[in-house]
Length: 251
Image 1 (cartoon, rainbow, N blue to C red):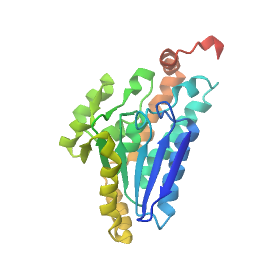
Image 2 (cartoon, rainbow, N blue to C red):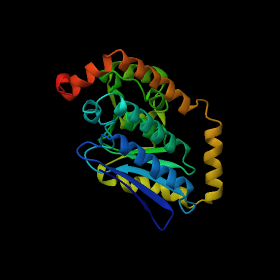
Image 3 (cartoon, one colour):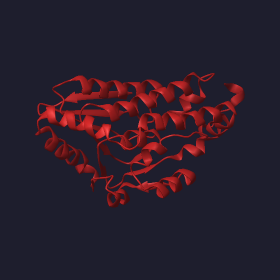
């Protein structure tokens, strides 16, 4: 697995997730994403970040198989803390973060995208929060930043997905382009931002976060509390075993 970060000469930093087969990140992977964004925030040569992915899809959330093949709650706690760190790093990055979404964007992927400042997507991109299928809760905070309240609740309760093209009408996705033009579209917006005085842009990012009506960090942690309750009750293990095809007796 690799989370790479490359600073271009124009001040655009490109952070890429590449963890085959589906970019379902391990605990360490989430912390690596957080680290890349935190490094971008402190690097004064970085003017804007493009967060993208290689492979079939942008992000499939946490690595459930890692969780089910780890005894006790270490992987669960690690995944929750890692996701929190990654989502927080995107939101609190000192410069704007543009998410370039291809293919599927599920669970934790929505957490990253929902906390980004700008979203562009390929015409095959779709988003969803299927957490209820695996006995977990989370990322409703971030889906609520992408769709209206009742749509978010419907998607959450049903575990349905929604095409990125449908989000353009809500203004949460800037544009949808053919897959082979996605990087160019993201870099075009990034270039417009990078051309501004970075001192002003950094101040603007802090100001916009300061007037946000919802504290996304506290909101997401509140959601995570219910995930731990479901785990302690045994519900989550049962559903994750079913999803991962894991035999409890062999763990």
